[in-house]
Image (cartoon, rainbow, N blue to C red; front, side):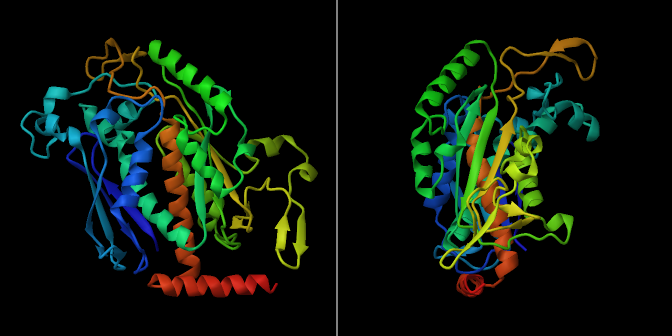
Length: 385
């Protein structure tokens, strides 16, 4: 089974990711991983932390000569800001009280985490709750992308909305159209919507506000048959929804038509089935978002997610001092005005990981050539139906 763990704090020495269950023989390069890490750091509205960090991966184990060994792949991303924090954040640091936090931020893990884990210094919560952890997930996702791309699957994302401005997902139909989003500072394919988003971000920055938004991920080339209807925890849609919802600040996930489908009659929602000698079974619409009954149906997988505004406000909301209980302003940590474009990249990584996991489960194989042979045999079986 493909699985991963991450470790590390926002201002700790490093972030660590361990990815277990990869087949041997998969080509992985630091250039590829670093390119994905750089994508995560971009985006109009990002904060000053991005000026400090320049994320680079270090492979610790599981890779030799640029190919996976079948053993756990361990990766490290060093925090350049560590030098300014090691006395405060070091495992045996001599001055941990220097940057304590006692004024919880509304919308963050500060207060419930402090209560749950019995912490009086809320920095012990916010350092791990920070979205900085997602750099390790993008490293994992870049490896997952390498695997699914070998299997003919492309995962691409773009931003639909920031701060209420909105574009149409219809602009993004083919894998080749994923690249234009990279040229946009907000990862948006609609120039008019892009300008409006940038204006809203500038206004929010002046007002000490933050903005949320919506991004969409599409996975092209996914074969029919990933996931299962037989148990709740094997359904592909629940697997994807859980993974995307786990990204910090994500408060809503939908697949295909999603919530819109609840407002329409069944005849306007469900995708009629056709068959062609060359294409096999197919649909002319894709309201299901490529998944029916918890199983991929061979159409493009479409998943979108809503990100709330970042909880750290430069003009902070009211709070209560965790120890004295007096009224105070919430703590202010270095943060972004918006991180929706970055969340889109993280979303790609999480979708790629889930698909890679399901591909490994369905097609097995201890090394890549074995897995690809199994996949090809399955495709031949589907063609003959």
